[in-house]
Every structure is written in structure tokens, then in C-alpha cells.
Length: 125
Image 1 (cartoon, one colour):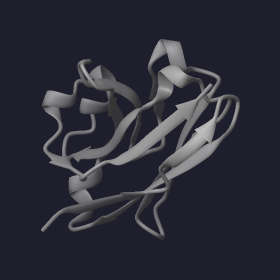
Image 2 (spheres, rainbow, N blue to C red):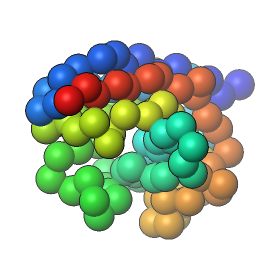
Image 3 (tube, helix red, strand yellow):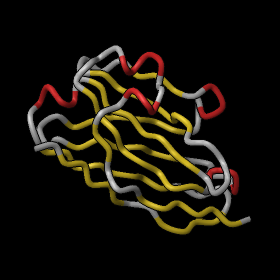
Image 4 (spheres, helix red, strand yellow):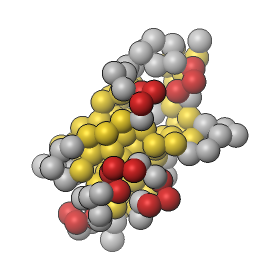
């Protein structure tokens, strides 16, 4: 059974940093692509970043340079380092995974089969 559990969210002032973690369990093939998504109130879910099983990373264009996705395969944990946070980064952040590595290319949330429960990030000005 695949389980994804996010942690690390919280409240931070503009310009601050947070690191989100996603602890994964279940078969390794379920994590051939892993990613972070976010959804702000009243807005559609958007892809933040993805990483595939050989470490290729992709980012939403608007977030490049501020966010970094990484994974520790020994710990089955996915991370999202978020720097220079802005109020518009306020959202619920979700970890997701899928068996198909090429899901990482499109970063379409609807293509991912497994999801965590989310962790809230709030950035105040």
C-alpha cells in the first residue's frame, strides 16, 4: 500500500524559508516519479516541481531559482526547499507519486496516482 505523508509546513514571513518533507512507503515502483503540487484557495492546483527515479528535476517556470526538489532514496523521503517565500506562495502543498516516470515531464496533477494529505504553507507580508 502506497502512503505519502507530508510535513514541514507552517507560517513564515515574506522572504523566509521552509523545507517540506514527504515520507513515502510502499513499493519502490510507485515512486518512479514524485512531485510537489500546490493549491491556493479559489485557485486551481498547480505543479511545483517533479523528480524522477534517476534524479531529473523539473520546475514550474515561475518558481525556478527559489524552490528546490530533492529526494533521499535511503530514507524514502522527498523534499521541497522553499526560499525567498512570497505571500503568493501561500497554499496547501501536496506530495504525489506515480509509477510512470514520464509523468514528471508534464507535471499534470491529474496524471499522478498517489497523493498525500497536504501540508499548509502560509506566507505573511
